[in-house]
Amino acid sequence: VQLQASGGGLVQTGGSLRLSCAASGRTFSNYAMGWFRQAPAKEREIVAAISRSGGSTNYADSMKGRFTISRVNAKNTVYLEMNSLKPEDTAVYYCAAEPATWNTATPSDSHDYRYWGQGTLVTVSS
Figure 1 (cartoon, helix red, strand yellow):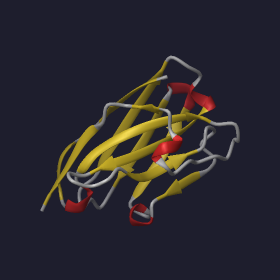
Figure 2 (spheres, rainbow, N blue to C red; figure 1 turned 30 degrees about the vertical axis):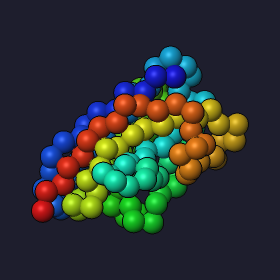
Figure 3 (cartoon, rainbow, N blue to C red; figure 1 turned 60 degrees about the horizontal axis):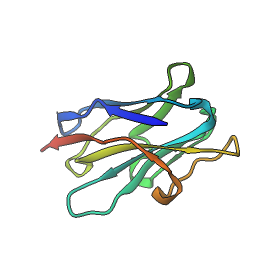
């Protein structure tokens, strides 16, 4: 599966952005999807994950209540709605996909994902 992330940009503290990740090449609804981020000089970390049907989600603690992951399988797209953005949210955001056997699977480790998009940069100014 090929993944194309978009929607990044420059936003002020407290602002919002919506990232999109369009998938192509395989049956999108067979894949659990995740959003990860990597800030300069830091390791890649999980932001959120969603099961293949969209019925289960999983968030990193620091994103709970501010970020929302969702998907529209008919559009082969997963979204990340980001609100109340902070300067520490500045990073390159990546979407990832992994074939999921279980309908409720929401992998949270980057090593669990086989397919990755190219990343989109989010910069939050103070």
